[in-house]
Amino acid sequence: MFIDVYYLYLVIPALLFSLWAQYTVKTTFKKYSTVQSRRGITGAETARLLLASNLIPDVIIEQTAGSLTDHYDPGHKRIRLSKKVYASASLAAIGVAAHETGHALQHAQAWPGLAARSYLLPVASVGSTMGPYIALAGIFFGFPLLSDIGIFLFAGAVAFYIITLPVEFNASHRAITLLKSNGILSATELQGVQKVLSAAALTYVASAVTSIAGFVRLLLLSRNRQR
Image 1 (cartoon, helix red, strand yellow):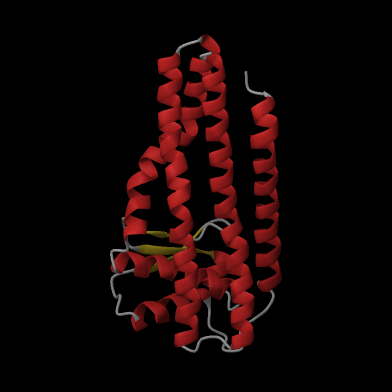
Image 2: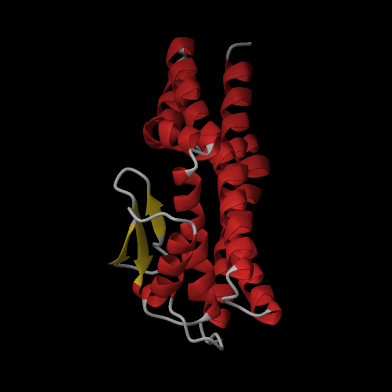
């Protein structure tokens, strides 16, 4: 029921790509976590400076548990930085903090991509966890309507992952621009930050590729079952 030719040729390669992306971001972050910025500014200080320079006074910066758990919460207007980012003056920490500040700037400017992703988040949460199982159950037991419902739910998750790509790319672009315009890093240091953000972007690409592969697999299984 769960292992089929489409899983082998579509999903497995996508999962391998995802594992490679996770490895790349972890190793790149680890490498540039040991490279301290010449200015000695921490991730939290970077976020505060960039928020102030863009006249955004209502976003709170706080520390959160875990590793690589950094994110911007638009519902509560909070930039949450992991311990290794919040208090560190490394290039990796500064890059991540600037990236999350880029999301805060998107929010302040009502950037449509961020709003669309936030709107799809509840749908994606349900679709990614329940959609594939509902679809597979419908396919296995021969209930086309059930499989269609599962595929429809999963489509919401796929849309979320696809919309996430331009949102994350834009935040990274903003991060580099903000760091450069505010003179926080030198040109050489910016190259290191760019490598950190490019590695992180791979994880979002991998999520999109994996979701698309899973979605195509379900469509093909459903079509073949109905023949």
